[in-house]
Amino acid sequence: MTLVPSIGRELSNPPSDGISNLRFSNSSDHLLVSSWDKSVRLYDANADSMRGEFKHGGAVLDCCFHDESSGFSACADHKVRRIDFNAGKEDILGMHDEPVRCVEYSYAAGQVITGSWDRTIKCWDPRAASGPERSQIGTYKQPERVNSLSLVGNHLVVATAGRHVNIYDLRNMAQPEQRRESSLKYQTRCVRCYPNGTGYALSSVEGRVSMEFFDLSEAAQAKKYAFKCHRKSEDGRDIVYPVNAIAFHPIYGTFATGGCDGFVNVWDGNNKKRLYQYSKYPTSIAALSFSRDGGLLAVASSYTFEEGDKPHEPDAIFVRNVNEIEVKPKPKVYPNPPA
Image (cartoon, rainbow, N blue to C red; front, side):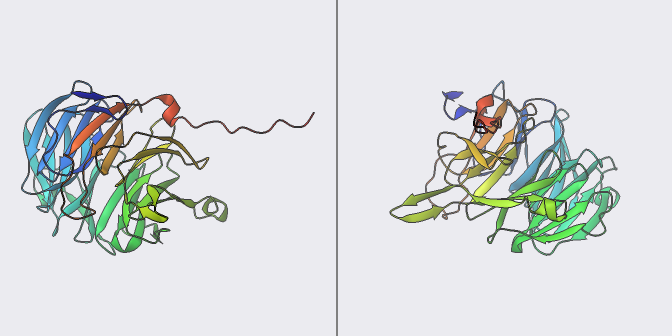
């Protein structure tokens, strides 16, 4: 394990190709990682040990936990798999017609939700006997290819190509509750719901994040805003980077963003302030995840081919200890009233 205090400790045995996602478990410091090298790996982030690995038939574009030793994967071979690291076995829950881009597990509904480039969302019951006829609950057409999904409670937010955003209630998937267009002008990279369930943050390829609210009342919609990030000025020109990743702190509700500039920034969305910027990572930030208590932040430093095929730093996973000062909102300071 290499120790670089400013960017965290680097995990041994990283994937050998681009990292598509990483996620901490809700019940331990286990970390699930999916990669373009066709693998899903389970790490113990504290012990720096790889607990297991599954190899699939294509690039793995997303993964999520079910419990601390099992989860689900979304694969470019069109398959949705359940993987159990303790038993060392995998089941195919079902198929899409094109690569599966996103997977989420809803603890509220007991369902797996997948989004694909075939322009559909599918819901699956992982408890059903193996076989797609039995495990598939429903298929829901989307306006375009699915790029990102996020869940909070019974809310499901689906972000697709063409800047569409569909918001569903998992208890009634027949129609979206709301159909929206992204507030940002360019392609959506990532959507993540606020932990308090009131809305979502959405990032684009053009160095911006928008803060959105589910409540359609005028008062709630007046609170929405967008901000610029992951940019730099060089010779009087603005260089703008895609924002690939958003992760919310589970305790404070502040959030980290990761961009193709190799930086991770921490933001206080309520007070519209940047709280912290970590030292630069070796290459693009492909994914971010806070541990269940917010004490650790996992960072995938992994070139995302935004500038095409070129020599780049090796793919790496860094785990850093999070200091409260980096993520805790600062109280507003009001001027003293005149005596």
